[in-house]
Length: 113
Image (cartoon, rainbow, N blue to C red; front, side, top):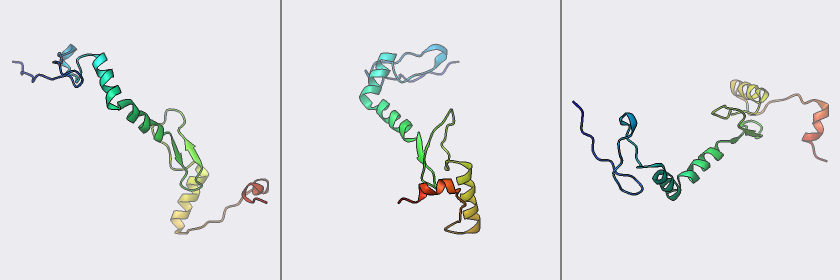
């Protein structure tokens, strides 16, 4: 015995939505209605904002910009293993500041004349 389904109306045009292959119920009567509804409701704008905001983040320790690389679904908190290890050491020692060894050749980058 089959259950009777309620009539579902298309979100865009208001016509009755047919039951598709294998009994799957959709919200729109066809692709054209779905696309025009998404354009008018701002669906694509919201989707792009969500995607673009999640593509970059700042490192929690050095504030360097981290950009999403490859197929990773999330962006990490730190830009490198060095920043991650320094942050862990700082948290474990309960200190606000740490001493870090910097090579002499890179020292000029930190001091502006």
